[in-house]
Amino acid sequence: MTPPTPGGPQPGEAGSGTGSGEAARQRARRAVHGALAATLGLEALTVLFVPRAIAQSGAGLTAVRLAVLLGLAGLLIVGAVLQRHRVGLALGSVLQLGVIATGVFTSAMYVLGGLFALIWIYLLRIRRAALHGVPPVWGR
Image (cartoon, rainbow, N blue to C red; front, side, top):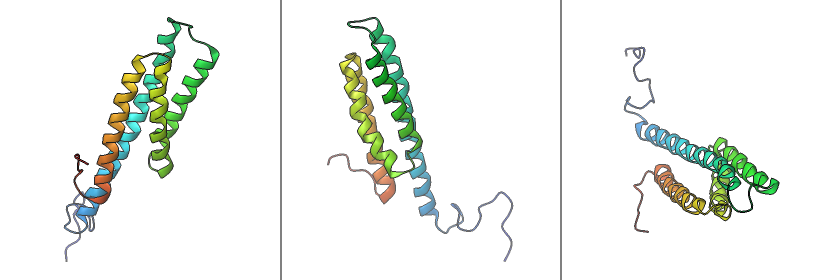
């Protein structure tokens, strides 16, 4: 038996012939978790632009509105960091409602929050498919 070549596939790694299906699922799982975390990060950035938009309209930017928006952005960042854990997935799912609710401050956030929620649902379906190794079924 010859020793493995440096830089080549090691026993049990993808490409070595054993366990490559599980390694591919693991890579897909990591990619989906990264996409979920990136989505929450983009949502936090979007929420941080809201104070600028509401400062120039209506009742303006009050301390309570600013605190709510900064708190939501902070929770979105925490959810992004925790995406590898089950609590991060649940927190991110609940925070989608908070992002949509920022439409109370400026109506454009209803649309943006809805788009982010649709992206989140799409990624959850992809995640489910990656975990179970089956292609996502979009009709159900």
